[in-house]
Length: 485
Image (cartoon, rainbow, N blue to C red):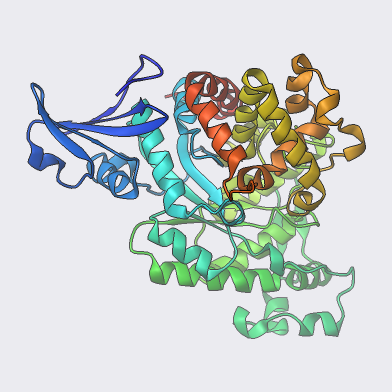
């Protein structure tokens, strides 16, 4: 077994030592123990050496489970109210770089290495178990010895929940965004008739009695709650609350390991007002939902792959008020979805929330892989860029982006030394960001996903370069949130 680098961290768990090493065109698990019996849960080829028994085996689900059985801290657990960050990985190859970023720049942060949305898993044909196992082996490769979480992100159905329970994810981000409705300024009786009152175990008059005439403290002022506020909130979010309760109760009934819940309505068109946040969470609490974090639809633009779009002051003012509500009703954390590359927001977000915040990044790690391609294999990068550009009109429907194809050159019009600008320029960066599905599932005439294979082969050869890029880039994300002892 050979290695692309001389660094070999590995993990010691009792008398068993586990490492992930590069072997030929891939990676293998190597497990050493004094006696062969200690390796019985692993699969692979075992031999006797002067050091004892040594097994070399595949990065399989069985071996990942055996690793987690011994290195107990790699079995996902709830992270609670700790300041935390999740780092998505579309390729399953980024965890080594993520670990280095947390180790160097994320002191004190709760780490979520396995994080992927149901949408991305379906688009890529990855299972929740694959997502978790890939993160496990990345942690072994870099010798990570602290507790981890695992986020099943943007779950919309009970079948999504079930598959992630079976994979032992610890954080379940329930997304009822498809059930959020537009509420007119003055909701009509017809609007109110569409509210699922039975599922909410409620009625309009009881709702009015709970809220109308009360006051809401948002930190810098106290607001009177009027009937219009309440009726708009229930029309807009009533069905979303009911769907969240359905998902939550299903999760609590099925889960056989400790879990925590986030509720996310960030991927909706209309901003969540501070009262609507208060209303939604209070109703969830009334119906028995306990949450560790909440992701409203914030003011301004949380577009994929670029910094925050909009004036910073209104966002900070709004976030401070949302944070006051979260402390008074919980406490629970506020979650920053589409948090990749939002560098302007990080310091004020930490200050406004007092550290009760969870950061989510995802596609930015894939973009660092494309940075490697642009630098090391221009021909491959041009193919990836061309497929992404062609797929953009369809791919953009699932994401908040504003890239304009008219501002995106054809790949053949860009010199090799200028390809890196396609990774960093806002329009082309967003196209690359959301084009991953077409790139990683694009099949040639033989049925092979050749771009996916070629990119993986490149990242295997350039593993240290990729990890270096991830450490530096993700480090910029983590550093403002770090909580040194």
